[in-house]
Structures are given as C-alpha cells and as structure tokens.
Length: 115
Ligand code: FES
Image (cartoon, rainbow, N blue to C red; front, side, top):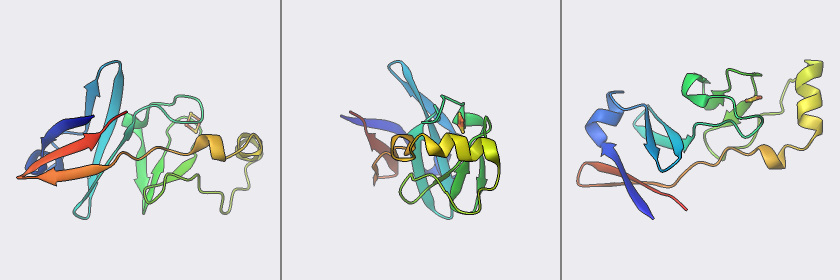
C-alpha cells in the first residue's frame, strides 16, 4: 500500500521527522538529499528510534547503542568491544535488521510502501 508521508520540501527541511499510520509510527530522516523511512521501534527491543542519533551512514539506537546501516538496515558489528553489546549480537543479528521502507517521490510528494 502506497502512503503519502508529506512534501519533499517539508521532509528535507526537517519539518517532518515522523508519521503514524494505523498503529505504527515511522521515523522520517533526510540527509544529503536522501530520504529514509523506517519503523520507530528498534528491532532489538523496541527502543524509540525517534530519539536516535545518526553517525555517518548509521542510525544509533538510544536504548543500547546498536548501529543500523542506512544502506541495508544491518547491524554494524564492527569494533564492538562492549560485553553487553556482544551478548545482544550473540542472539543473532539477522532478526535485528532495521527494515528500511521503499521511498518514492512524485511531483514533490514523498510516499512509502507499507505492508
Ligand atoms: S532497543 Fe535498540 S539497541 Fe536495544
């Protein structure tokens, strides 16, 4: 189902940083002329990604600090030395992929494809 998120202007100027559809809330993030949309609940333990920080090409969860790639949603497993983080990753990173929604822009409006 194709859903309107908002205007490209509003998103790229950070007037829109999240939206709700049904029972779910999604984060809308714009950087370097690209727009990303993903579920506001962290795939690890539902941390609120509306409060995430961004580091290069990664979303950093505010709850436990896992980093998710904005390219493919995978958890960044590089240079993790913290034992707690290692214990999280030992449970399997495949289940913890951040699902990035497909974004399309038509006539200045931004849409995402929802299930
Ligand atoms: S809830 Fe996001 S890293 Fe744990």
